[in-house]
Length: 128
Image 1 (cartoon, helix red, strand yellow):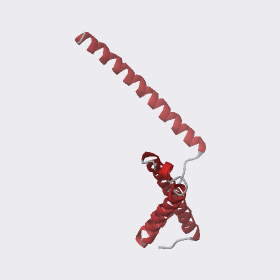
Image 2 (cartoon, rainbow, N blue to C red; image 1 turned 180 degrees about the vertical axis):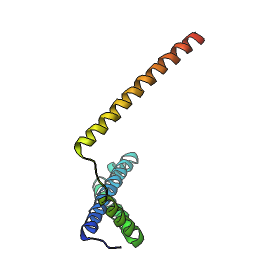
Image 3 (cartoon, rainbow, N blue to C red; image 1 turned 60 degrees about the horizontal axis):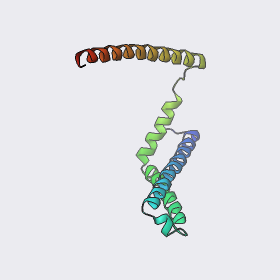
Image 4 (cartoon, rainbow, N blue to C red; image 1 turned 90 degrees about the vertical axis):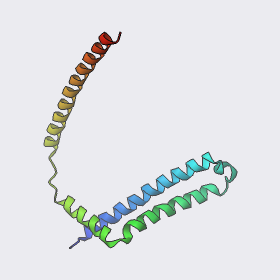
């Protein structure tokens, strides 16, 4: 498979974003655990440092796990190249399709509310 420098660069940017998201989730998990088990209060001098280092370590480990398999990396690069081939709709076309979706959702909302009123009246009549 021929990969361009742009695709590999975008993949590395995605890996960095994945690392940041995983680190943030781990940071929030350590923060929650610290509050729940009172570690943040008992070890207030070193717990924030350890939890931050642990969160960054878990984020880096997640990215290392993603990058270590060459087959997975080539799959991600192939996905990027396929996405480049997609013809995206124009802005006016997107506006038209969005309007169609809004109208259809509104019609179904009216239909469901009518059915709901009918069922509620029927049940009130059957079960007074």
